[in-house]
Image 1 (cartoon, helix red, strand yellow):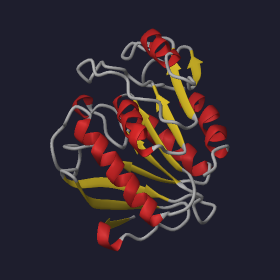
Image 2 (cartoon, helix red, strand yellow):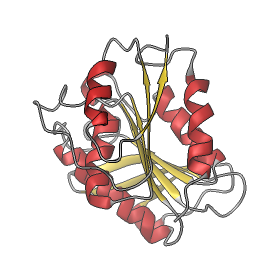
Image 3 (cartoon, helix red, strand yellow):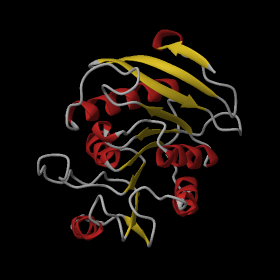
Image 4 (cartoon, one colour):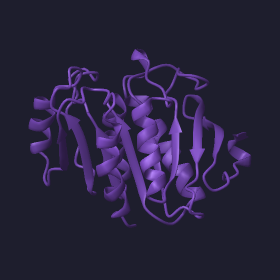
Length: 225
């Protein structure tokens, strides 16, 4: 696995990863760039991890599952650490600066992959940040796993619709992010996203990651630029 600076980014070999240190709006961003096994990626996905102040990092298993599913769908993936996590510089900014970082990374990925679908995805805190970024980026698809609305964001209003196919996966017994609140808020979007409800997976999908993969891969395979 190589560690690469932004100015000398090299695509990893098919099925391999490259560590990436890139200059961002608040300092260096630590990321992991992954290439699908099938050769040239048909697009890319930028994937956001859960809350930095509660142990969230790009190594999170749900984030890994999102990356794995996107790779199976033929997309290159970029997982990264939010501000103040791992080797990423800066300080936690309650979703504001983190949104700017997502947009910055998506722009860099588009420079490297000018063609094909752009996908944003995230889990928990990362799902809300990805939704905020999608409202500006207008990607080709958005994936949200257990998205919180307002819980970590000072009651911030829900972002506008991303304007693209949107998949949400949430467990009915989530004890961290209210399923009922999520369901109610999502119903207010026009059109509402594709909401996949599971039972017994809790917030972290312990032993239930396949529930995510089972809907994620076909959803991403259906996405075109």
